[in-house]
Amino acid sequence: MFRIGIDIGGTKINIGILDFDSKKLVDFRKIAVKAVNSITESIKGTVLELCSANGISISDITACGIGIPGTVSGDGKKIIKAPNISILTDTLAEDLEKELSVPVILVQDSRAAAYGEYIASGEKYKTLVCVTLGTGIGTGIVMNGKIFSGSLGAAGELGHLPVKENGRPCGCGKRGCLEKYCAGGGLDITAAEILGEGKNAHDLFNAAKSENSDAVRAINEAILMLGGGLVSIINLLSPDCILFSGGLSAQEDLYLNPLIEYIKAHCYTAGEMPELRKAELAEFSPLYGAAFVPKEIKGAPPMLRLTKAPMLSASIMCADILNLGNSLEEIKRSGIEYLHCDIMDNHFVPNLMMPMEFLNKIRPATNMPCDFHLMTEKPETVIEKLDVKAGDIISIHYESTPHVQRVITLIKEKGAMAAVAINPATPISVLEEIITELDMVLIMSVNPGFAGQKIVPTSFEKIRKMKKYLSQRGLDNVLIEVDGNCSFENVPKMYEAGADIFVVGTSSVFKTGLTIEEGVRKLRETLI
Image (cartoon, rainbow, N blue to C red; front, top):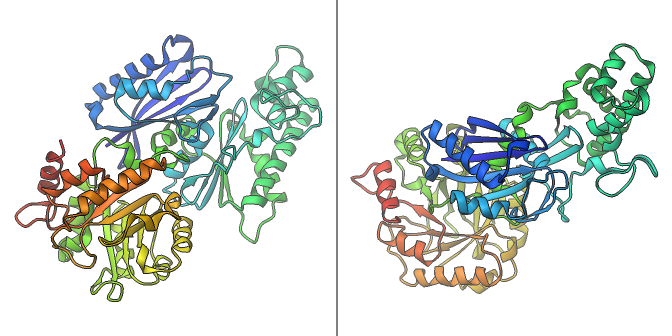
């Protein structure tokens, strides 16, 4: 599978095609903004050119993310404010979706940059802040594998921190904002004031290199202002990493390195200093992040909803445990999206399966996300011991704990998608008080505990009711997964009823006489 990443700037548009599995940039093109008449047509033409040049079909593209220097709606579909880019249209996402037949999501470029750097780092940071020092100051924050937007959607506006009362007018409508003194645009103004009309930030740094005392003083003042803002971020968020990108980050001797030293000398820490360094992806970070960010946008459908085909979750308990390494490789090669990991305690269900220690040891053997299904009493004690990564799903049974809300919160704190499973005899109505907190509902089409059972006949109607229940509440972004006899015959009916993801086992993908790849291919053919 592939993703399209797009970064729209003031002078150029970067467009790239990225491999979803390897997280690598396959190829890219640049378009000069001044050469664009229709942004939709220009992007479409470039995407098709990239696909053709790399032997990729447009049907292999599962999503497109676009980073823009402005504010977008919570669902990532509308541009709310982008005053500096005249070629943008309010219906860009909608228009491009129609032209490419690919789901399109918009995201603020600084947030895309932060998420891109997070992915490139191997997703190793718990809290990452990426500060883009360009014409303005953009700040993206990634917490627990997700972009942090804040309750009001405006988190990360470091550039608009007020630093001078009745200071320079800013494009946001206020005066005295940080970026009007410390970013490229602000230093352009400073240069003109000190060196004369027509001078810019580049001239200011050259003057400082020539030991112009006024230029040196002006740059040092900007460092103190910006350093104070970044120290505040560290003191408030205690991130484990702050990255710097953008044109000003190239001024290492005069700007970036002194800025880092100021931060180290003034921030409050509890013994450990956050990692402070330049970003790795440079100009490609917004493009890179935009390609992978669709699942992270507040209110947007999760990644699975963005793909054009139903998703499969392979039940590990049905795999060849004695040759599990080979099975994991074949599962990934076949295009299955999730590893379904059943955990049973012989109390909530009459079976024992998949201890946490075993599942945790599987993690280093594959980079596939896990779909943990907890059929246990006191699921919170199990969750605490699981090796959970961003993109994983954790499902608990509604009936398994009196503290469902508390466990949902724990799942989200671990960085996973939260799901609740309901048994065949459990009514949908039990979800009423928690449904808005969920990313997915798991419908059991058999009674939990054993593989190879016959489907409960009312399951298809229950899926339809669940789909209607979600739609009536405006919760179409909540996924429906089905577990139990997801056979070649039943999956098409489940999909037609409204299910999104299917737990596949001995009745299809792991069916005797078929390889995993043959089973997946046969199953997908039933859905065409």
